[in-house]
Image (cartoon, rainbow, N blue to C red):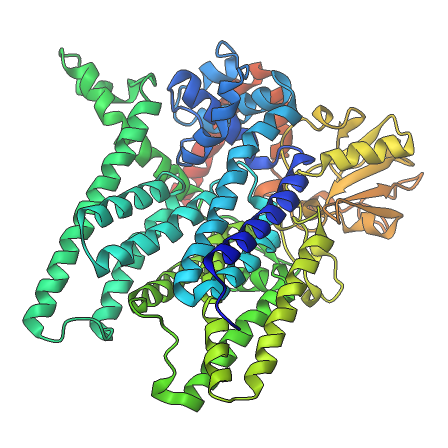
Length: 637
């Protein structure tokens, strides 16, 4: 394996990114707005048009602002006299109002297809920027072939192809976390004002993308402790020199972090400039009070968002056919194994095997780290351990997208494979040539898998699923995220249906995409539904609903088994009887809500259809929370 000239490697990288743009962009272009995008797009539009941050505080604003920029430039319509906007001025109110307002922006006041096309365009650019970043860093870690192998693994990963173009926080935070890793290590290696500036900007981008970016501070600590426990060869040897060396870098870290904090503060200050400051009325009404409240809004809104994120950080989950009331440690390892291409898993195993073989054969002479890159490899390992450990310990087990940072770090780890094989071939180890050809074959297999799965990347599962349907193995957006409604529309037209029952994974109005749609709950069919076609999200069959009873009837897979079309029997058996729906005691509820609770999707849908229901709904929710709190107090006594 000879080193590729820069120009040739850059051309190859450009070609791979073009392939990704075609696959991911082509798939996303024909998908309906997904669950979280409903709130994100509307919120981003309001940030730019009104400089008011009342909507969607539970997620930092950067991705939403970027997605909304082309929409605002094109004159997207949003009605700020609408009740969903005025209602959302209260802190808890916005958690309900943001969905109604976002639904109106995307699906009522504007054309949904054009709106999502332009909103997803900046996200597509972010996705490609992450690929180019992995290529460049992989090249530094393992020369041109290593960078190209990293990029190939990235552009063919179904998780990145599915979520990359969507208006979400996961891909953009991955980009800035990888950039923070690199700039942090560069600053640690050679502190300077420029390196501190680059690090501060990367860290600010991460903090403005997702609250989980706070894990980066644990990564910094793990990196520093690892150098104390096992210093690299390029560190000073003397005790006094090493202490001065560390002090200089601690000071650079402090300055870079302060600069990042200033950037985050400034960003929040701008987008919250017109937001009401009623929450600071406690300060009083002396002359400087209005400006003081305005200046305090950025840290206050960031803190409120962080608190909202913390409250939502533990939810019920479902994995391998079992439901759990909270996250489980094995969730992400299992989802990673099931939703990664087998060729990628084989490349990881091959990299580890070649590394072990090289160390056994060449021992101390097996040096795979390019000059000046030892700290970068140490940083990569520490960041991977921290983020992977955080995912395993997390109680928020919903989707492979929450594993994006560890996934990207593992991809970077592949950069060493071509160089290790080259060293072993030069040393005359014959199996190394087999490893080289195996690498090429696995790389081609990755491309084949990505092209073959197009455009259905959401429900992708590899052969480790053993032929079991996805709804028996995984949950949430690992299967369906309400992106397949255009497929339902096409199915209805193909069948000549004027009416179709839709049990969707989301809480938007299904008729916005499927004119023939009627909202449906597959656990509670009416006798009048007999003989009709129903379309059920894969996520509603065993997890969010209990509708396995449907699968004994004639079914057709839609969008790669994201949804299932079911021909209902003419006579629907009674609940609890053979072939019939479950008894109410056996129902499952969307979002992990108790089985006896009202369908949360219907609550949102009622507010979307009639915004006058917003106030009664929030009052009912608050009353239920107060009752729950009183029951807890009584149980403690």
